[in-house]
Amino acid sequence: MKFSNEDVFLDVNETSVNSFLKYAAKAAYDAGYTNDIEKLDQSFLAREQEFSTGLEDGFAIPHAKTTAVKKPGFLYFRLSQPLNWKTYDKKPVTDVFALMVPPENAGDKHLQMLANLSTALLEKDFKEKLRSLSSKEMIAQFINEKIGE
Image 1 (cartoon, rainbow, N blue to C red):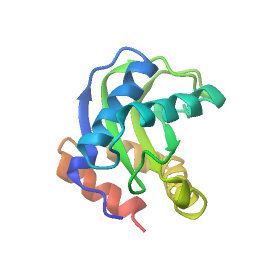
Image 2 (cartoon, rainbow, N blue to C red):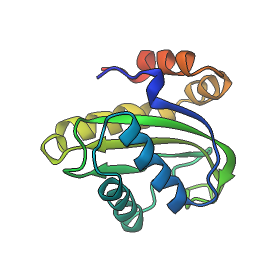
Image 3 (spheres, one colour):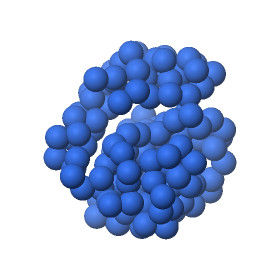
Image 4 (tube, one colour):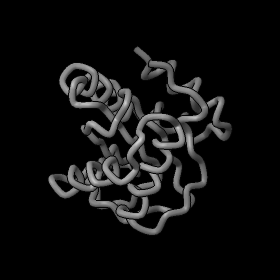
């Protein structure tokens, strides 16, 4: 799975977690990960209601496991204004990785993606470098280097 600049969204301006998840589902549709925006959005929402996907240091990793997903992958979003998201450090979210997998890849692929991403997000250098990059191409290249399989 290669992460490309079509998987990077900058200056995303949403005002709530719910409106953001809807935006992410539409972005996933545009990037070819789903053919059902509504079903993907519902899957993101259901997961969020189960347990918040907000982490700390301004990051969140919403994820969806649904038949609406055509191929496993993830998208990166940089928000233009921080979102009030339930996080471990009670700070708002500015950067989001949205993970998507079809049920048949739920075990191995999903867990591997989540593990790679979670590990990278524990590194201060990774977060700082990611936030310092301004072009979609540079961000995609960096993500591939650090999280690629």
